[in-house]
Image (cartoon, rainbow, N blue to C red; front, side, top):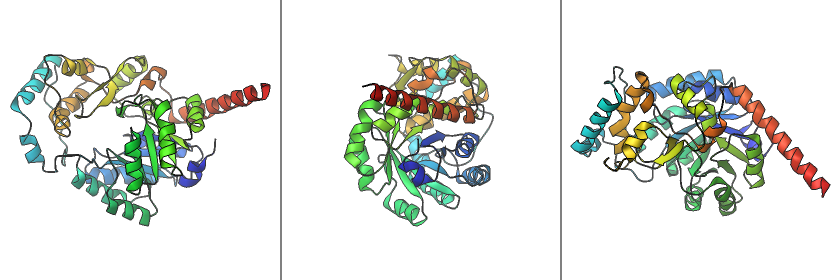
Length: 361
């Protein structure tokens, strides 16, 4: 199972795991994979605390961070952005809060809610002071000075893409490796399937390494990804139901019960297409009478408090999360180590079957 990615990152298995949960990231890295913390939501002080803890929890094993450097964004001034949100949209969210029984938030957090370049640079300044081995950039390449600073510090850069043109743009910007995510994947996704996208990206950016992402939660799929030319896989959804994950208990139960048909691509979460769990909250936004979601980052700013309050107050009908179609294979809760072990075992069995079949011919 060893590939060039293992040598590049200093890991045992070419399995990269994206998670917003520090405990999952650390457990993956300790288990021989490579954990990546989704850091975009943290203010700098909280991010520093998370990474300080990760430095200790990973026990010398490498890990990475994922930040957002959007190519298209409307600025970084939160007051100006909030002024762009039409009053009727605010009224619609209040109506949904009444409909679903979502009370006002009782907790507060610090820092800007804007996911722009100013905030990302602040997060990057924090991250580079820690034992980060990889900086992954979503929604566009990291700026040139960030790339240069990362490389000077021995930190590799990666970019998530959903189309070939995005992959070549990342390479032109100096990105070291590309993560090709098919439409099956959770979160921001394009319209091309993993099976079709990965070989196209591999050919377009060769000899740069490519990770396959989107719908991967089984060792057989890892074998297929390597056969397509990828040097490893980027996984995300499968860690939501692990015992280490801080996913809300009710939401974990919903994910375990879900089938692959229980996801939907919608702009209601961020203003960009996000594959997520199909919930009554999403249906409310997809209804003909609902307003069209606002462009990013306005939509995320609009719904953020209601979304967080639903988590805080256990409002089951409004509880959702970005998740890929692989959710149909996430039928039980297991430890991170158990997931890694099963991925490796399934991969080995798949390769054995391929070799045996070739020998039979």
